[in-house]
Image 1: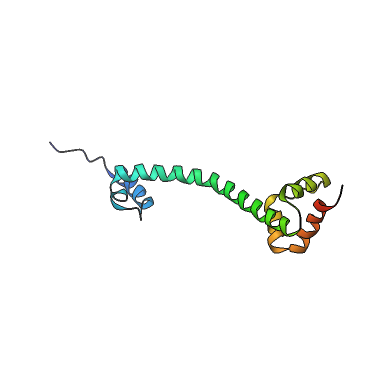
Image 2: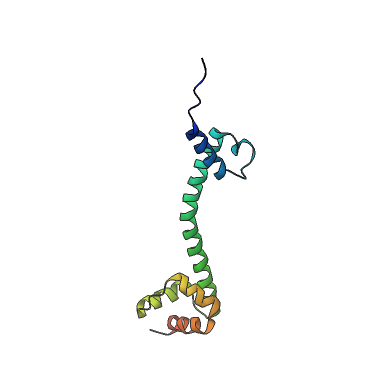
Length: 117
């Protein structure tokens, strides 16, 4: 009696998994069961990483805006409060870009926060 080898489908599935685990260390790249386990884990890390990246960029933008505010004699929270009061709706990404690449424009925005109300 001979064993059943199940045809081309498992081989195709295995090949697809091994293609994605290429470059992994040790048996994680060439043993199907182990490779599939770490591949699944890598998908989880990727999912978390996509959420994490948004968080990290927001933190970076706030740090850049605050640094530019300090150079212009105000603070981040005062600037954001003043912009909201005046009705200027610029998001943190744009404000950080202005702070880094267009200092005169950012200085004018910072003047709103230092102006007595």
